[in-house]
Image (cartoon, rainbow, N blue to C red; front, top):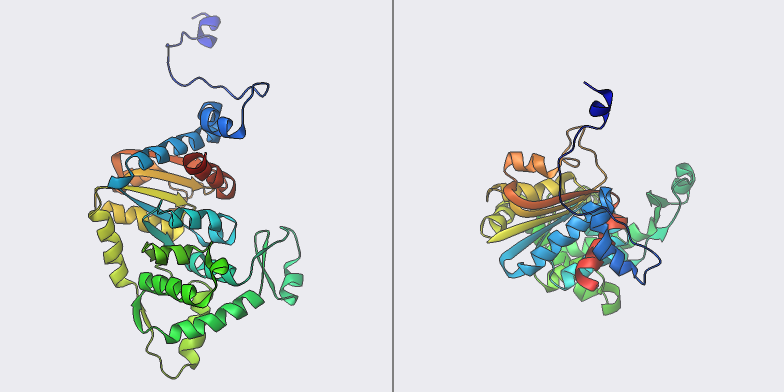
Length: 326
């Protein structure tokens, strides 16, 4: 065979979206770029473009779709907390699953803010100063000391309760205890006001667990019990009884699996949007792509889905803005 024929093998004709970036000499805005060009740029920009189109499709069918929203605690540590609170306030999601940090840090931020720090500062020095670090975000211990005062009072007000009821009651407690300007950007507050359930299967994995330890260890009257078994019935039934479902996931871990596993009971979700930095090669759930979910029946075989690899603090504001605020 002629080497030229090998190198320049005859190609088949294909049609599709042409790769093209914005021409910056045109009179265009950042909004135009995100909405009209991301899908054409390629790589992860195109995946984000797909995510925008999928969420817009979800909005078109909003009355018939139950939206499950999952995120890990570091998402609330960051400024994405306010974006989530906006979605909850305006009822753009129906069911939330998060970790203990995703609950407690929302409450703590109502008391005192977290502070931008540095990735490379000495950990020993921070410990000596009583300052905790979450990436490049600093959280001084006085935030947790203030949080403990509220939690001890809150624990006294509850006895036998599920984790989702715990989150609802905590939102109610926050509403009673704090002025409007302190709670306006709180996820817990708006979830309570709009009766949007927050599930937290690992409720003890964080400062809440520390406070529960102090309370149960030293409180003579120990009636407080938190049940997670009833919550799994409630979560699964929300998926089973929905006409259609969508799963929007920031990060991975337990929240991701909780929402897609609930959808296993209905033969998979109809829509899925994943944003993650986790890789699939180690077999972890956090990095598992939608196709793996399809193999388990957690994502429907005909589902509309996308996985965007990247930092949610960069991607999620662009996604939400493009769908709801443009």
